[in-house]
Image (cartoon, rainbow, N blue to C red; front, side, top):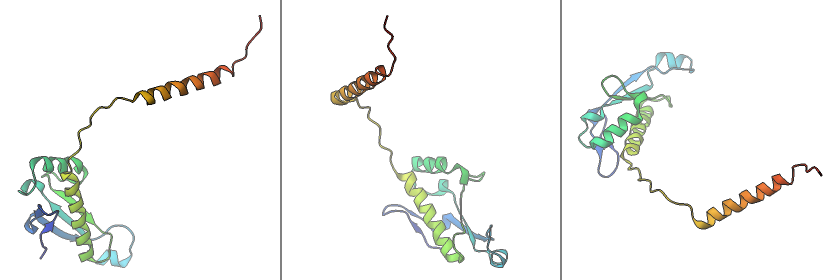
Length: 142
């Protein structure tokens, strides 16, 4: 049976909240792809996980809209390897990374003002460009 998925030192997703099913892989691979079910579908519903906060659940669902089914379950597929057990580990790692990304707290942006030196540099460069272009114009004597 599958074991619990450790996200970090504080959060562990119980194995009974994840379901794994093996399906046939798509794409090239010949006879092996046609007869062996090595592709893994890992399903996880974050709403059932008490370890995750409400904001983490919302961020997880918002960031993975394309991987959701109608019930809000995240479906992760892995068909990178030819062996089922390696694809299971790959799918579990993908889920771990998704949850870690949802747990990150975004820094609040503090608006800054340009320094006096940077303003002066910008103005002098504009003056230099203006003079350069002014020299390109033809002057007519009257």
